Image (tube, rainbow, N blue to C red; front, side, top):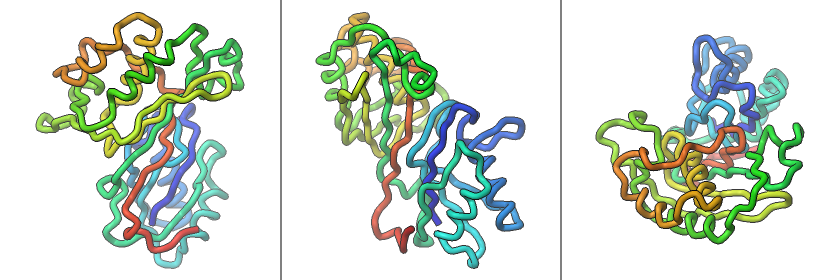
Amino acid sequence: MQLVLHYDGAEFSGWQRQPATRTVQGVLESALERLCNAPVGALGAGRTDAGVHARGQAVGVRVPLKWEAAELRRALNAVLPADLWVASAVEMSDAFHARYSATGRRYSYHVGTDQEARSPFRRRWEWALEEPLARDALAHCARTLIGTHCFRAFAVQGTAPAEDDHRCTVTEASWRERPRGLVFEIEANRFLHHMVRFLVGTMIEVARGRRPASDFALLLEAGDNRRTSAPAPPHALFLEVVRYPRDLYLGGT
């Protein structure tokens, strides 16, 4: 079965279960064990970092046959805390694997460009930047990302296997205006650790005029992240959707 989760990452130490800290996986598995009277593993499509939010985290679970998707969703939402919600539950084929069956993942990053972005009602979910940003520079950098590239310069070193080529295929990348700010949206077949945050941090430095736009193409050929700008903060990043082949779906809610 696939569960699609929404969560506010502010009070979670990321997705992955940890023995002494509160994580999304840990909280979800505790709720599943309570309902199923036995341990139930929850396999996420990917690991979001501490502070990162989700509106489309996909999770694979195997529960007793008595549980239908709609009933499990209602039961989980009755016992989960307010910062974690099951948006949908759907029966999947036995071939479904939350991580390896995924064909695409989409993230968004939210930037506030007005003074009110520092309001406590917005700063939890936006990176507050009160300075002019060159929109043409942001657009240029985003266009550079389309296609298949090595993103070694935009990843935390040592977090991928040594034989990994760090290549990702980006199908969409763009900045768009929104009321009182900007949103960066990117979709790819996979993402590396901190990849979106490194991309946003570097693009913002270009848009501030602190480094040339030409750096972006050079970084896509770099063998490490020594010349990459610091990653953007995690609290403005959202996992929006994980995509799977349609033939894996058996039904939905």
